[in-house]
Length: 219
Image (cartoon, rainbow, N blue to C red; front, side, top):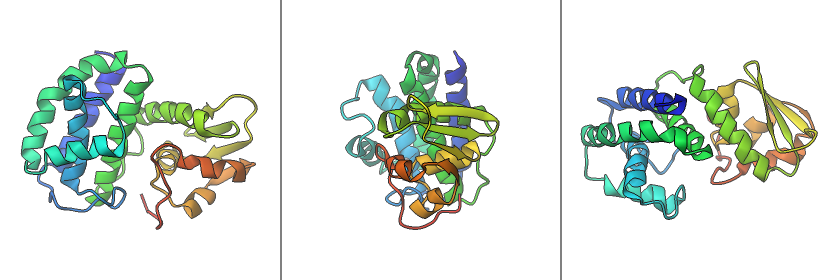
């Protein structure tokens, strides 16, 4: 098992520890259509779908919603048991997935942060998986941004896009990831530590399925 496999296993156990004994109906503010159990159903459903070859429409809303619907009548404990059975197989495979492996870890960590917020648990602000998440975000942003962006976070620098960066965004890895995955309002993103031509890049931070929420979110 490689580095990504180790991080996926660690993230799975953190997530399971957070949801154990939680109210399954608790709303998740940063995933407004989902509860705590729905969010668990999504992250646990991904390895099941990978192993079953159910990859048509991967990462789209219908694909993720099918994971939630399939587990609607299950308890948190039952979903956790399924994940503990399928997860180790993904641990052994994820390092062979290329960039998709980092995407899987970004998704898991993002939803871990979502559930932590919903349950009033401290945010995960310092962990190696945050570097992996920013690796993937820089790749995704590079394909979406009209100009290159430099990201400076916790002593490291990432570049999204090619050429001389038009702007630099500074912040913690946690805050940058939350901003780039739709967990910050436009006003919050604009208020971050920018230099250069930020105005030309803020719109593109809504890349992929991520959009700015209507209201400011604390974590």
